[in-house]
Image (cartoon, rainbow, N blue to C red; front, top):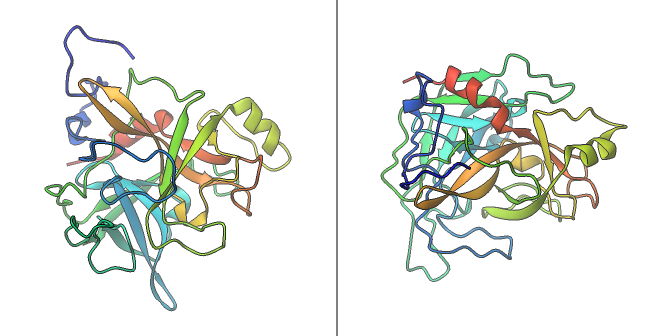
Length: 284
């Protein structure tokens, strides 16, 4: 990352794009937490305020089956394979799906009510293939602006330019997805995953899929994202200006059916390759 003589609050971006102003570059990827627990799989209340749950109309009622991330007050970033006709809306500010009000373990700090929003429009990448899972990315435009006044609902940063690659880094995947026991976790969980080189990933998946440059791989050590985490983020805390911010580098795409299989990483859509598409797609 290039260093300026004076620290700046905004990420160094492709300032020529007409829609750049729609991304909240001054306060993205920020959390009020002073520290994070690196070990352990349960996220803390308010640790990932950009997490979104996608709501589907199923025969037995409404269900949460995919995740996503808030990237601006009006847009959710998710995987294309999560975008189906029975989407009902998006929930923001959720932590524990079983509680009416989310509080920390000491009950001294509680979050406001969740925000349930309808979807105005859905934008799937024109070259998405459900056969190869290539270009597995979509945007959902909310029917109204999300309320960003709470510390529990904030957008994540996107990797525009001058942000280093994730080669060899430990990345974080977050979601409510399937656990090793086969059940869905009601509480937001996280896992720290090593990034896996494309060459190694291609060799592991060569009998099943073709891994391309617009994908990245992470995990393979019994911790992985699972079906319920589809569409959620793979991210890294990056120093930007005077602050460290959470930047989304991947979107959970797929893995082996038996997720978390030792030796097999999960496959993610590489967000770096789609920033131009995102900027071209979003509007006021």
